[in-house]
Amino acid sequence: PSPSSCQPNGASEAALRCEIEELKRKDLALDQEIAQLLSEGYSLEELEKHISLLHEYNEIKDAGQMLLGKLAVIRGVTTKQLYPEYDLELSD
Image (cartoon, rainbow, N blue to C red; front, side):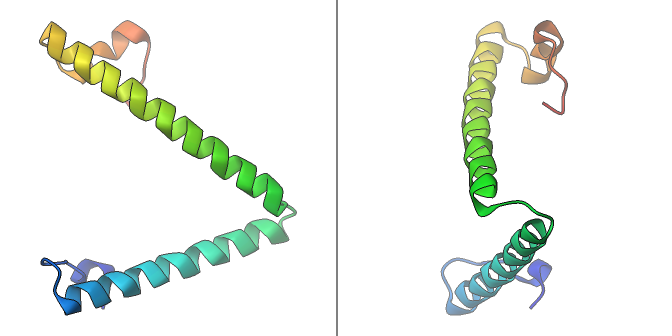
């Protein structure tokens, strides 16, 4: 089944099998990407450090988004309206 045909509908066995297949495809794609990066000269330790830093970045970004959301509620504006005030780009 293609990813678009994997629309889980509860915990049915077919939906779970479809989800497992999708996860297997993602795992294979990630393995291939890691192999490519290793062939380009990156070390496994370097890749693990980058992954760790990306996790940390995402956690900090999530906290910032949460704070912006709370501030937007307090001010009665949208989060988007706060971005210029803090020199943020919408892609941030």
